[in-house]
Length: 313
Ligand code: NDP
Image (cartoon, rainbow, N blue to C red):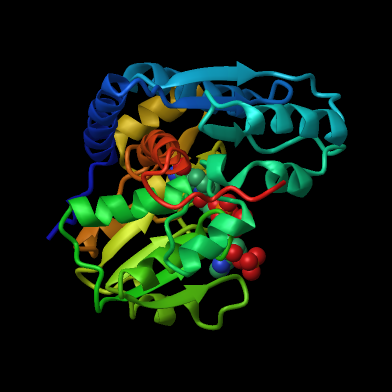
């Protein structure tokens, strides 16, 4: 039986509607959450992401502003910008779009963001909050994965979950969220022996690898839930054929654009899995929705409806 398709666009729309209604309630109390996005230089992919973030803010009623320093900015100049945003009361969330140019010390910049305004959830204070289950800000893509599971009524507690990928922005936080949800979690990476057999243990399999269609049907237990975080651009014809041979709709788009967006999970997995997220239209749309949700959460936490996170920095 074909897998149930978990529609990320639909879930993202639900969350954004909830955020919009919360923003309205806050407006009645005279509060308008604000997000500052910092985009250094002109990376085309980053420009698209930032445009999407600003547009989503408008749609849900969050104030947003964009800072676009030149590609040549120094670490010190960028620190000054971040420090200024940290001090502003009308800004609740600060997002520094990655990647930063090579002359900028990215770690120093991310560490300089006030943890109370760290809507990406990358600051070590927020990483610690997540692992100790204190109220902090959780990275957007991992919390989007959990929202997909919860809102699709897929239980986490007691399930075997396998996460492929151990990055600080996806693999590790998603594993931590699954542990906090009482799953039994295995984290895999490039040195894991016999990855297919480890993955076949999973009731919930999360792929966050960055390799187009790597997870084939041999990695998946029949009926498992498969969440595909990967977003890979395939431009090579033979790679396209390996993944989408016979898919006329994809082929038409591939021929027109010269590329197609593919997850880390091979499309054939839909024949084995019980439920699966598509790419595009799965985890991707949740990332911006959770950014909106985090900005509202930061606004509430900073105003005392929860623990204050800020450290002197
Ligand atoms: P990273 O490159 O930081 O991490 C990839 C992880 O995959 C590493 O832990 C690496 O292992 C592991 N890995 C690589 N090759 C293999 C292999 N052959 N077998 C097993 N494990 C392997 O990537 P990210 O976590 O940043 O992103 C992962 C994917 O998610 C990408 O496709 C990215 O584009 C996508 N993404 C999507 C988002 C969305 O909004 N949907 C947001 C963020 C990311 P090791 O540690 O040993 O090197």
